[in-house]
Amino acid sequence: MTGLTDITARIAAAAAEVDRDPADIELIAVSKVQPLARVEAVLEAGHRRFGENRVQEAQGKWPDLRDRYGEIDLHLIGPLQTNKVRAAMDLFDVIQTLDRNRLAVKIATEAQERGTCPGLYIQVNTGREKQKAGIDPDETDAFVNRCREEYDLPILGLMAIPPADEPATAHFDLLAQLAERNGLSGLSMGMSADFEEAIRYGATAVRVGSAIFGARVPGAATGG
Image (cartoon, rainbow, N blue to C red; front, side, top):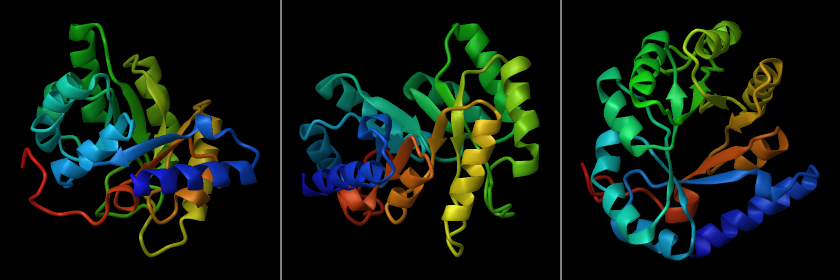
């Protein structure tokens, strides 16, 4: 799988530049809206960590793939509606898009009933974009504390999607500062175009889709 091999090598090189161990950086292969054959090719190459944007699409794809390929670490990296929380917690190992109090309460309630909870990242709207989900940077400290102390949620770290029309590095730096201030080790940031910069700013998880799979093919993935 040429794309996967190339990205793995680039992660290792970016990590070496800042004296980091590449093993400390998770590569999340973003398989949303990808033909099943491409996903299977990456699985055949041995990769086992994937990201999906929609619960419904993931439901139509991953139960069968898990039956065939065994243990897979599946991350939800798209918006989560409160009415999909139960389905998401059935399917995903990590939810990276905890972005509001109502969702935190819903996840906490479900987790209490189950006695277990996926790992969680809090999504921060570092660019304060009105159309984008995420906690305002100025409210992040209080929200992290509430999720930990009031809701007893397993917060692994912070996640961000920088504005497309701004240099990403300032947003990576801000997210890293917020995480450090709150004693969080997880930093999910960086995509196909900028994951190497994200690694230089401390990313522990990078979300790479098209650079691994090729251009997305809307309608080609199973599950709708």
